[in-house]
Image (tube, one colour):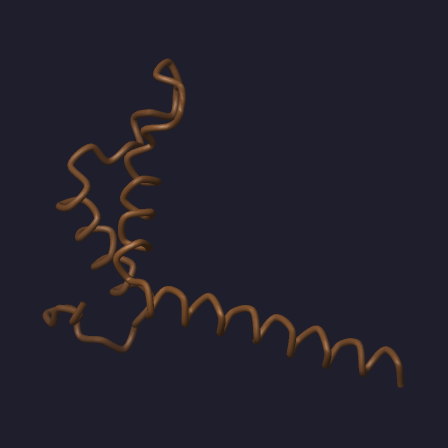
Length: 86
C-alpha cells in the first residue's frame, strides 16, 4: 500500500514541477530566451576550454536552426516540407 502511494505521490510531484517550469517558460519568455542564448554562447567558460568549438557565436541563426531541427525530430508525424510555427 505504501509503495503504491509513494509512487503516485512521486508522479504527482514531478508533474507539478514540470507544470511550474512550463508556466515559467511561457509567462517570462524574454528572460528564458536570453538565458538560452547565454548558455549557447558558452561565454562564461574558460577561454582555453576544449569544448569551445560547440559555442554558438552567431546565436540567432544557429538557435533558429537548432529549434527547427529539434521540433522536426520531436514531431515525426509532421511532413518534412512544412515549417514549425515558433
